[in-house]
Image (cartoon, rainbow, N blue to C red; front, side, top):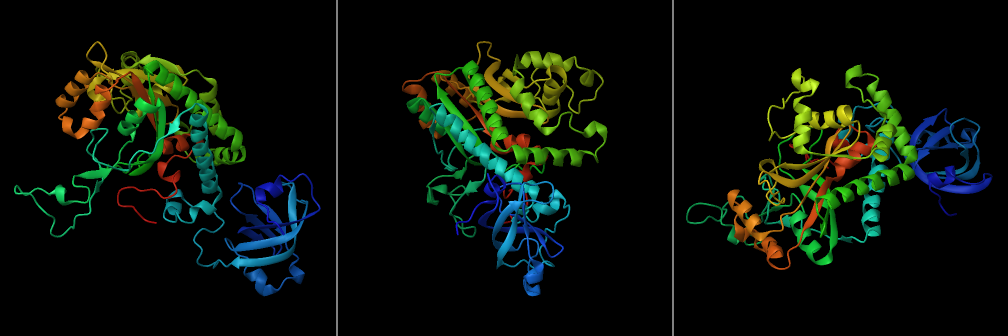
Length: 477
């Protein structure tokens, strides 16, 4: 008999048919009612066992998370909450689950406990919903760029360059820990290493993507990136995924248009294709926040927040305008901000970004033309010599979700900026070549995929939207 996914069975046009399915036990009640789930949907299907004609030894093996093969008849459900159930005619236990040792019993567990059991947490409703949403969002990313004529570009994961100039990178080496070869002045001799030079895990595929945009027109990367920041926060990971489009002949305004259109598209697609999961996650968030003080609760429910992004125009203001608004805001005047805004040039914090979005404008916000001194070397310098053609998109509840810029296409200006920051020209000779041979205006942005998943699912810790989080002192699984 052909096996069906539980999602397909629950959406079936008619009952009274013979069916077969496989999945894992969520609960087993009264020696009769099995709640079975196979991961295809947030919903379980009820399987009704003829316990009087089923061996007691078999019934005892139907425990939480045991894997079952179920055959029977799909019939209209007698209980509320689902359209169909299965009257079981044949049951086979494919894999036992020791009820006393299985750590994730059908009860409420803390997210911290579930992180310690990351290999099993996806069997819970919350994490199966989050990971289905993550999968659909990833598909929407590729779908959007494919429909817009972009080419998918795979940036190298091992690199000799630091795109951000941050210096917080994971070193890649095949040199031995004991007896590391040294130069005459005592430094590590990387010429004897595997690649013949110092290499690291990438922090961004942007620089390499720029070179491909200057030949293919419009490309995007979507791959893992790494930061060796010792940040134990709910917003940071050491390993995460980045979406980075780069487009030749696009200026900053084109870049803002692309980013806004892209975000709307992927959120709308996910809302249309993950309705049940998002409804569940919204209710979960409501239940979680009942225990919080009123001041700490979200102002908007999850679906309301997502629609807020879809239905409101993204307000575009310069960094300078934003600083004036923040300096004169009540939280700043009353010293309610943790980081007070006192002068132009301040690096905005999440509290400032959220104030602009949630309190002042009550819409998503795009800030542009940031001070050059707080932005990366590759961003195009404005005529004022003080600001660069950078832009950040700010969302409710999360602050910055996208960062991008028009890139500095002028060779002399780019070299001058690199020299001022102590970035050797010989390290990025290949990057400078794109300015030597057919330079043109071009732009791009970066979107941390986990930040996007965090926003869409309503989860509050970034460690809960990636299968196996990599954080300081944690590389389990």
